[in-house]
Each structure stands twice: as structure tokens, then as C-alpha cells.
Length: 144
Ligand SMILES: Nc1ncnc2c1ncn2[C@@H]1O[C@H](COP(=O)(O)OP(=O)(O)OP(=O)(O)O)[C@@H](O)[C@H]1O
Ligand SMILES: [Mg+2]
Image (cartoon, rainbow, N blue to C red; front, side):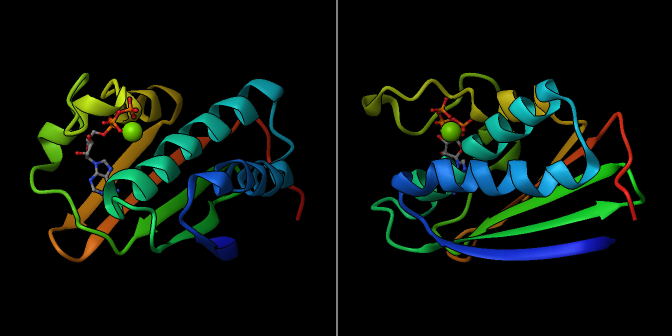
């Protein structure tokens, strides 16, 4: 893992655009295409908003983001909260599954992350929190 960067951001939805911008700036090290940047920002948005809305319910905790490159072309972004955690990860990741039906959630966040990333991994413990790891191989290499 190279070029590691760790960021702690207050987990409020107002900071979603900041989380997106930071991710785009970091990914920019590898000179990605515009399409790749949009995909990365979209996936990060979904994970970040999940941490705020579901992890912390009232958006009352910090979100931890960790960035790194595996090799010279594969981007890794970890997005963690210390919130309520997920009881059944496989179920939570199913398309259209949401625990938040009253609030216009569509249950498509994980599906969006999966479609834009090469791999996503979810680790979670009830009462302890959740970490979503996003992995994407980019078309270009970062310059050492
Ligand atoms: N960080 C998290 N902490 C606790 N629960 C989570 C977290 N992320 C997701 N979940 C659970 O997984 C479910 C599915 O998440 P997903 O992002 O796919 O859909 P959603 O957030 O409900 O709706 P959408 O993202 O489409 O607005 C959520 O409804 C929630 O129950
Ligand atoms: Mg969501």
C-alpha cells in the first residue's frame, strides 16, 4: 500500500461534498479519466451518506476515510463509522433493501457502489460500527 492518507470528517450530510472532493483529489494522483472520477465520487457519496444516516442515525459522529494505492494503478478507499453497525450484511447489500423506507431511501446505495467499483467489502459489528472498502483499478498509473 502506498501514498496512504487518513482523514476524519464530521459525519453530517453537509460534508458529503467535501468527502467527494477529497476522494477526487486523492484519485487525481493517478491521473484518472473523468468517468473514473465521477464513479469514485458517486461511490464515496453513497458510503459517506450511509455512515451519517444509518451508522449514526442523527449524524452525530465522525466518519473516517483512509486512502491508498495497491500497486500503482489500484485505488483503495475505506470509509468507516463507529455507529450502530449492520446486523445482516448480505441482506443490507441486496438491491432495494433499506431499513429506512419512510425517508425516501431506495435501498440502492450498495448496488451503486458495486457497479462503479471493481470490488467492495463491508465489515461491520453491531454496536461497534461499519467499514466499507472500495477498490477500483484505474486505467492509468500514478507517477512516483
Ligand atoms: N454505515 C452503516 N451503518 C449501519 N447500517 C448501514 C450502513 N450502511 C448501510 N446500512 C444498512 O444497509 C441498508 C442498505 O444500504 P443502501 O445504501 O444500499 O440503501 P439505503 O441507504 O437504505 O438507500 P439509498 O442509499 O438508496 O438512499 C440501509 O438501509 C441500512 O439498513
Ligand atoms: Mg444508502
